[in-house]
Length: 162
Image (cartoon, rainbow, N blue to C red; front, side, top):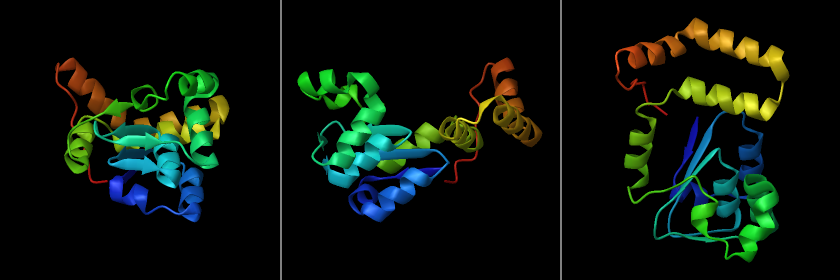
């Protein structure tokens, strides 16, 4: 799993965006301030995109428009025509600082499961790949943690060292 905070988003260059798009693990991005150019593209291409309430999202380059189209699919034109509201294109708006948000968001999520889901979605490998990946997850004991917590009526807790 990769977490990109505001500083990492602003530091991206074209090569880093290409490398980001080639990743198979889960990518989570948190934008703050003015998010434009390659930073906007990376934020929108992320598996989970978060913006600070005061952030401004500017879609100003072809890569950012491609990311908007990837995220919104057929709704892209109507989204742009209706005012391109940031709340309609990102997954979450959060006033927490990025590191606090990341720790809280990850507290009840399995990095292994998130990475597996991201890889399966990107690979589009079909049933054989899914069966192999689920066998790997069950062998590692990830589902058992979640099931045990569910049966105990608790939220699961996972290691969040990402």
